[in-house]
Image (cartoon, rainbow, N blue to C red):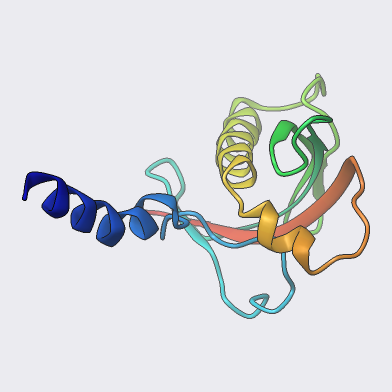
Length: 139
C-alpha cells in the first residue's frame, strides 16, 4: 500500500518538479515578444529599459546543457551601451546595472528549456547568440 501511494505521489508531482519555473521567462522564441518582463530593484527610481545580447556555449557531450553564458552587451536607453565588463569609464551605478543584468540573464538562460527549442530547429549550433528586452522598475 505504501508503494502504491508513493508511486501515485511521484506520478502526480514529477511534472511540477521538471517544469519551468514561473519566475524564469521563456526567452528562446519571438512569439512572446509583446509580453514585457519586469525586474524590481530598490536602487532604481524610474523605469529603465534594458536590451541585451548573450552568447551561450553548449556542452559538447549533452546538447541541452549550457556550459557557459556570457553577457556580451547591455544597452540602457539609446545612449549607453556597455560592450564588456572591463569598461573603465563606468560609474558605480552603471556597474551596479551591469551586475544586476548579468546575474538575471545568466540565471534565466541557464534554466531555459533548450530541449524544446532544439526540437523545432533542424540544426544545432554550439555557440548561439540570443537577445531580449526587460524593464527594471522600482519597488
